[in-house]
Image 1 (tube, helix red, strand yellow):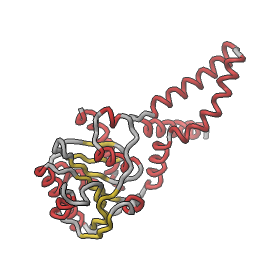
Image 2 (cartoon, rainbow, N blue to C red; image 1 turned 180 degrees about the vertical axis):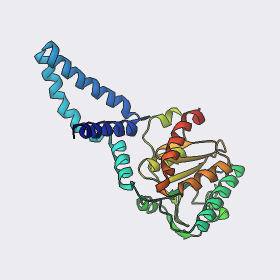
Image 3 (cartoon, rainbow, N blue to C red; image 1 turned 90 degrees about the horizontal axis):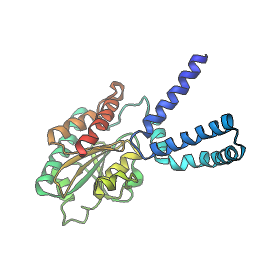
Image 4 (cartoon, rainbow, N blue to C red; image 1 turned 30 degrees about the horizontal axis):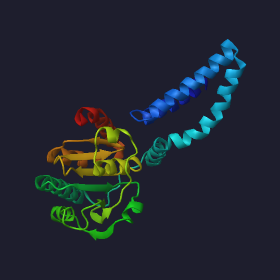
Length: 266
């Protein structure tokens, strides 16, 4: 039982490190670990009562602040835990999935050619109703022509995101949360890219972004982004997201996005 106890504790620390890896929370976690080590050193070795008292008095406040400081990471972890063991839900048959993917790819390619920006969000297991309610309800059958028309700069719906649920366009001109990651500003991401990352930080949605400035296609998932996609690669990535969870498609794709993010972002 002791070995099992140690294994569970080690697994908890491993999961914590995986969650905060590549985020600003890493530095905060390091600071917290250093503070705990200082408490142990000053209390157990040097017997400095005043310093150890100050550090011990600070720890409870930091423990109360942890849920606030790590709120995005905790929310993402709980969301992932709630999805564990489930299959990706797409309300449609394989033929419908292929039609929707082909529609998104063709629309993205045409938006790139026209140098129009676009943001297409695909709802998966976590509902996006709170963001759907901010837009214009459509409930329309998706087509490349419709999506291109929505994001035409002279139409009233071009600002915001199009959200797909199953094989339907649910709403357009939806307002999404912007990512709070400070690295977004450092890499000069536009509002569409920050919104795409923001909605994938708080849900398991997949967001396709077409940049108006650079004419490039990107995909955001789980708070990460892979950029400079060709239509063929976009099609392959979207198809991968509609595979059963049981074959761990989400796992390898998350690792794929994580590995490629630094190299492609440049």
